[in-house]
Image 1 (tube, rainbow, N blue to C red):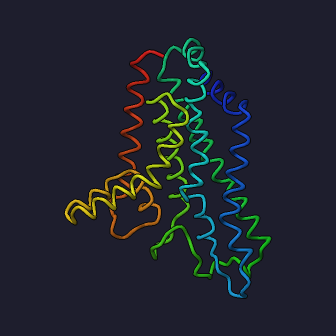
Image 2: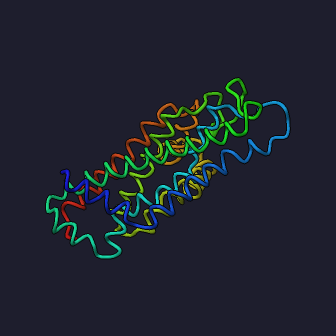
Image 3: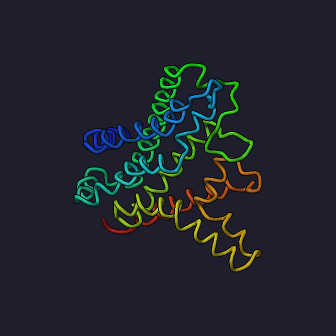
Amino acid sequence: MMPALRYEWRRLISIRSTWIISALYLALVGVVGLIPVFLNSTETPVQSWEGLFSTPGNVLNAMILSVIAAQTFGHEYRYGVIRLTLSEFPVRENILLAKTLILSTYVIAMTFLAWAVLGVGALIAGSEKVNSDASGYTISSSDNSTQMWQVLVFGIGYCIFAMSITMLSRNLALGVTLPLLLATILEPLIGGLLGMISESVEPVRKYLPFSSAQAWVVNADDWPQAGLVFAAWVVGIYFLATFFFIKRDA
């Protein structure tokens, strides 16, 4: 198992795009989270620490990290390296576990780095801009603010989903674009169409993966099952991808 972990770690850090995407992610989180803080011209703090640290839970930020998630398998399929990997590590379960662990570790590390960037920016802005007593604003539209652990779990779940799509399709671009399209276009469109058809079928949208994910992250009061639905989709697509990865030819 350890050789597979070392192999995957070296693959991750040896790809130039890993460093480029990581820098873009931190820059995007910083811009989204700190620009409103620095543009505030009033003397009243407009942002809370809780609200500031919810910034990485935005779906566009998760989309940047999903590029690395899709490359976990997509890079090897795209350049034909997967055959060399399977020759070196014939037990496919070890390859899958190593890639999953390294990807999850990467997402956790990047999320903590994003929080560090936001924290440094807030300290520079000063307590008159960011204050724990401020009402603040978060990615949540409800009175229940988004918790830091939810941001972390959402990022991991989103990236595991993207990696699983790449495993199934063997297409790097699809692993990046499909989750983003589902979250931003297709699922809202489906929800709107269901509402137009009948009120009785409208609740079906509460069982869509990213509608549920975003409802869970923002703690929507009328979606109590949202976290479980999102988890079921992530685990389901992951195990489906695992089955095909182990059973079919490279």
